[in-house]
Image (tube, rainbow, N blue to C red; front, top):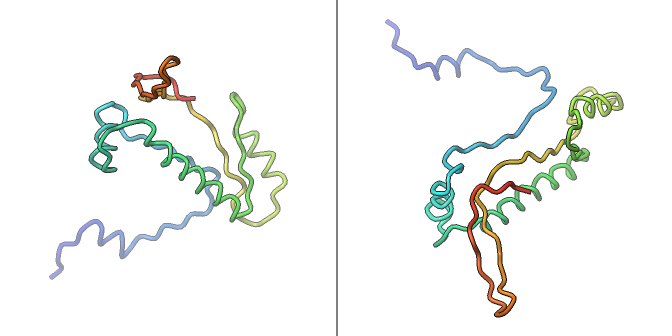
Length: 143
């Protein structure tokens, strides 16, 4: 008599994944709840524990991510290639691949800036009093 098995058990016991080649991998992060002001506020207040939500709180998170990428490429000795607007990424890859002599490995890490509408705050200073304040603005284009 055989016992019913879950799909996870069958896959774990009988399926092996072997990857021969990945010519490119993309990291795209899309979190639907963070596309709305209420979701961003909830992220900073409930998830990150801040008493208020401000786009200034994203800065250290973004800088830590960028620093980790830079540390990775430096540790691995691979180039970090910034893609220019309109530049074909496949053409850049072909140029680097033509000079690549190792049997396998990481060719380069490419960086492209995608424009997206974001909720952001901006620092303002009153020219008369010198007071610093923040004002929220909706759906501005990210730099």
